[in-house]
Image: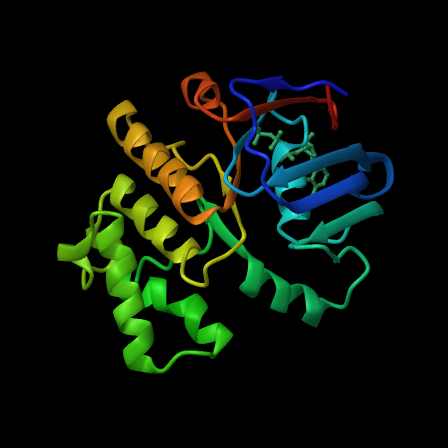
Length: 235
Ligand SMILES: Nc1ncnc2c1ncn2[C@@H]1O[C@H](COP(=O)(O)OP(=O)(O)OP(=O)(O)O)[C@@H](O)[C@H]1O
């Protein structure tokens, strides 16, 4: 297994690790061996890019790392805890506690305000009062430059602004790892850079690991570690 490193990785703690992951999708003759023994680890404070041709298994891997789907073989550890064989309840709890998601077409509820979108994961975790959740959501939205638009509905925000709400929301429960699927995919270069700079700054400041899937070579170039995939494996 090889990897391209743009700059030396910080000697951060490993927060996410998988070993020999396998996943088959589809039924009968359409059954495809999508992940063919993938191993990966992510350390705090680093931004990782998973790149590769369409259909090579990047999103499937991100779903596995996000505990959104069970593997057919292999293991996943999150913050040192073995997750791959755990119950659905344990996986849901671990997702809320340790993971933030920035997925292009998922999770953001456009019919709700920016504020409500950011509050949602905190409400699921159930640790903070309404006033505390609102204060934290406002502060997160300010940090992504949307302090003036907290009450706008998702439908009243631009694509770049929606992505920034998604980032604020991904940060709500102070996750160890942020998983992002094409976080800049539908944005122009200026907004791509804004969103990417924001993610990187947060990783460095908060010591989070960021794992993103991207087709954008400019974005990949700026990540700490680039992992090219082909046919369900890292090359
Ligand atoms: N439900 C499914 N049933 C059968 N095959 C599937 C299913 N979902 C995905 N696949 C196949 O699995 C492979 C990997 O898909 P995946 O979405 O992970 O690729 P990707 O690298 O993220 O592609 P892209 O860059 O186009 O988003 C593809 O060949 C896809 O057709």
